[in-house]
Length: 218
Image 1 (cartoon, one colour):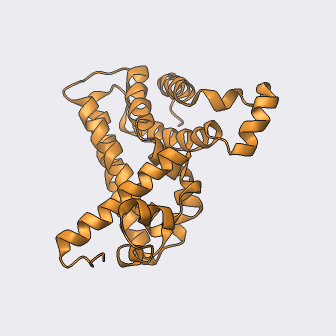
Image 2 (tube, rainbow, N blue to C red):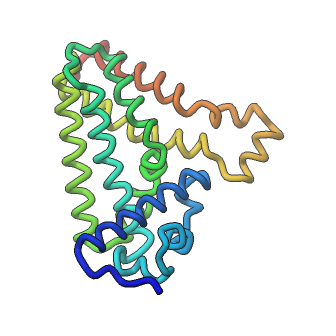
């Protein structure tokens, strides 16, 4: 018989196990939309009612996963930056896109968080998510500012566009079974579903270069 977590450490381990199970299932099944709490708890080795001891709802679990994703993206950018300086617009964009596509579940979550998850939890949980996500964003912006020739404002704009493009392109490049069948029948409609990474990389580089060539509004 499974025992309840009897310590803070046990609870943290089981909460982490649920997050890891949710992420693994999202990768295996092709997206967060296909992940159920029952499958998550089974993968984590808990009773299906046990998740409620750690997360109040599926939305809270996935919001926690998204919050962790912001931290992972920040850490990836910091690792990529190291002691590099003077990066031009295209190389700066390559750092942003390369680190972002290394986190596919996070890219998926970037669509679902504003549509559902952050609005379907209680106020304090939403506040904690926003606080930590913005903190990670600001730290990424500061790291990129030190390594890039782009201005601080340009970097903030680059990150904003990266989030929007990654969220949208990830969904297009991971169609539902119905759309996947349709794209097999009409390949011309499905071309955008085949090139998530190169499309994101190309458009972010183009945008970053454009930022340096567009006059600043007066």
